[in-house]
Image (cartoon, rainbow, N blue to C red; front, top):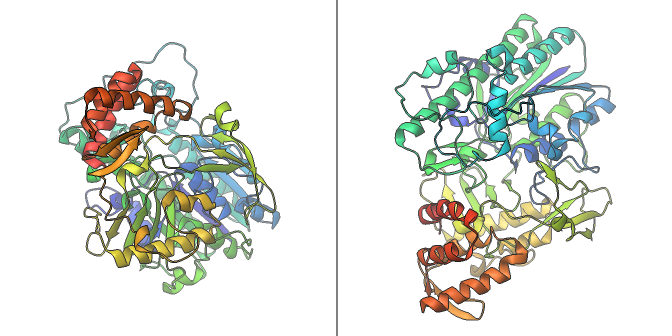
Length: 588
């Protein structure tokens, strides 16, 4: 028995459904596999999702982006211990950063390909030539410059990381297809931004565009022109078409070597991406809409022989690991919460009522396949919130000294094998999710999530399920406090927040009584979220003084903007102006 897992990064499921996107091999894949129409991710973004692909359990309630922990179960390592050879081929450069460095050594062997995005790969002291581009928040960041250095070394398609990655994957299959008991994990960073592809893929989407260079969207609201939006959607489609080409090479080799008779194939992604839908770019800064959360999943299981059939059962990323282990006759561990999909592949057997998903410190989301409930924090400052870890690294660095100064020893969780953990204050999020409030969508009537609904009975039902799912994940108890839901006891009207109105509400800033007006409370929470905790009290006092000078008690977003522009350092001002647009358009 053999198994191949192919993971594309940031693959928007809807781009595989649009008839204008050139993806013949994804259509061919659908004809050869079972297609899961109701698959949701669990822990986002990139590395938290990959931790799920090792452990088969969600991790976003306990910590932010980070390595595998010493207590984690790792499926490739379990296979290795049970006589199944595991091999990783990847160009996903987050594996080589501080926040991902414990994953690759869990396999028997691994090959890593360099050069995607701002991967610190090629060294050039002289600045690269960068064309004039649509304004981008990254333009002063080191990996913006590095990306343009890296592109110089990819003048041919064969030199691009995806091409090299699939070449190495094909070599492994060619070399080992007659052998038994192996697992190949093959993944590429594409179609993750930036959308750097060669001309033959762009030519599939010819269109008139005479504006600034634009192949790397911001993370935030859409401020670009309609021409720019449509252009970058086609740039993304070109990247999807490149992925399609290399997927086809795997399918060709499986056909040629008659591998369908004994080889499981799973194709999926870590999460999706917003490309202008709902006036949003990207992920991680907005509520987790289905363009991000609902992901493609294709599975061929040679034992059932089912293909070209759709499944509606609610499944998640955490189910991939138990399914692979079962295929090789290996039992999942007691700490794995994902389900084996064998019977669902055969007959659409139901395996769960609800699916839990989210990002650390953001909304905690739950769906039953029809309704999606996004529970936001009820605390203005998105507190209390902690990281629990024995591996104190973020994506590109260690936990800061200030974070480490907050360390306390925490009791074990059910899945930490009796080990106590370091508990640290979580660092500030780029966007405080409080500004959006909580949201409820009915996918049957509103599949694109354009019109949130208010329904007390459904909200109560979803909160009840949310509490149950969080408990089953052994969530830190303070997450319930952050979200304003009870750990024990009945769900009452006090816990229902969809009807919340933030305008006209009395409050205090310092000792000064005020009334929040329009979106003032959301603006206050957002900007204060950027202020380091040690300066928040001082900032609050300065705001109070400015309010008294203005001789007003009604505080709206426009007044706060004036105040913040006076008291904050000048380097904050561009950020404030950008955030102002976000609150005015999207804030509650």
